Image 1 (cartoon, one colour):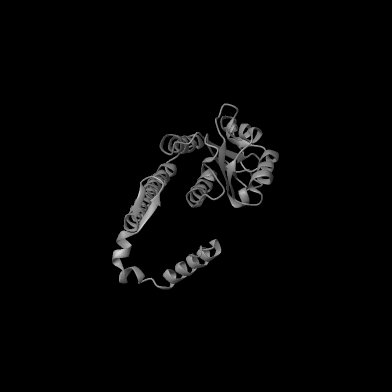
Image 2 (cartoon, one colour):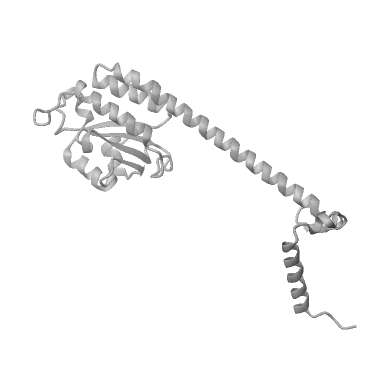
Length: 234
C-alpha cells in the first residue's frame, strides 16, 4: 500500500475546505455528520461542532450585552452632564458680581462635575479690573503665550498641561494634569476659561466641545455687565 505524501494531504485539505466554502448547505444535507464531528478545545478537551458554535454565539451575545450596557451608561452620564449645564445658566444670569459668577461656576464644576480646578482669566488690557478682582486678571504676554503654545489659532485646547502653565492659570497648589482652555469673546479678546482635572487623560483633543463652547458664549455676554471694559475696548 502506497503511503500518502504530506503535500497530497495538504492539497486534499484545501480541496475539502474550498468545497465546504462553496457548499454552505453541505451540513444541512448531512446532519448526522455535523452532530458527530468532534473538535479539540483548549479548555473543554474535545467538543462537538454544534457545541463550539453555541459557545461562540453565547460569547458574542455576552459581548454585545456588555457593549450595550456601556453605551447606556455613557448616554446616562452625558444626559446628566447636559442637565447640569442647563441648570447652570439661570444661576449665572442671577450673578450680580464677578465673584458670584465665579463661585457659581466653581460650585458646579467642582462639586457636581467633580473636576479639580476652575479659573477665569481675564485680559487686563480689555477689562479695567479693580483691586478686589486682580486675581482674575492675566497679562497680555501670558495670555498670548498660552494662545501660541496651546490654542494655536483655535478657540479651545483640550489636553495635558505643563507645570509652568498650570501655575500661571491655577496656582501652585492646584492638582491639575489635563486642562480645557476656551477663549472668551471675539478671538479671545476677553480672556479664557480654564477647567482642570487631576486625571491626565480626562481632557483629550477628541472631546466634544459643544457644552463648554456654549457656556463660554454666555459668560462672554455677562462679563461686560459685571466688570468695566476699558474705554479703548468699549
